[in-house]
Length: 299
Image 1 (cartoon, helix red, strand yellow):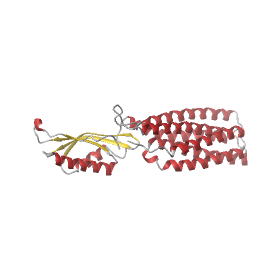
Image 2 (cartoon, rainbow, N blue to C red):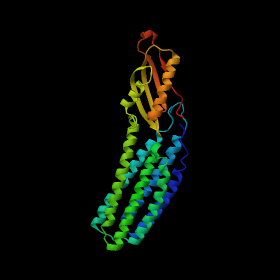
Image 3 (cartoon, rainbow, N blue to C red):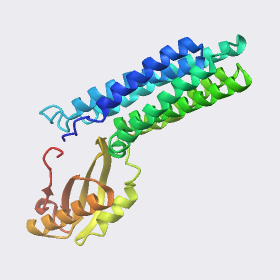
Image 4 (cartoon, rainbow, N blue to C red):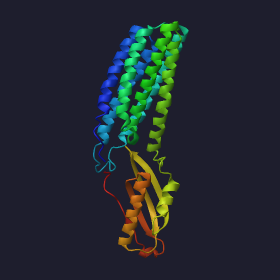
């Protein structure tokens, strides 16, 4: 299965790196933990996007004699690595926030606001680029959550800058740092959960087994369905294998039923890779008709 060249991930990687550098410099100059925390968050997203680009290149490699499904699952492994990185960043932010509560430092509100506004603008643009591909690619979806978190964190820091300028409240800075940490946890938890479902070969949410079985049973000529399995390889590629019981039928009739099953699975559940073993329920065991469909590598 060939993946598109990651033309959106690469500019997203460059732009995110620029934001991380600007926020780091601004946070140091403004003495703002919230801005430094967001810079750390963005810096980890630079690493995450770098992994995403490398994983997407790897997942585009064709299937071979050993990796018969190709390398699409590389993006799932990368998404789990991204989750680990972000949870580590969260721990750092929480520890530093409580240190600031104990020893308050008043940041430079104006600089804090300006740098955060720059970061928010860039992140919104990057998010718009990634959103176009996030629906069918787990790793791009993970990158999009990173960017959304960055944008929300930057907006929160902007608000903090305004509060500091008007009221001179020092505690708002570590409080906003904890807000950024919460954004990280909520966003990445969803990605880790989805990646775990893929690795466990769970049935996709949009293709419940009961509904898939019922759809196959509605095809003319099908008597029964058993040993039904549906799972996700990666990159939006869903796979199905099952045994289907028929009455005594010619190979040509079984082939027509197979085509109808394939069309129904693709239209209703976006399952393009379908493997069906036909069994003749009414035939003697030694005269059973078996027809196996084994499509070529994912296209």
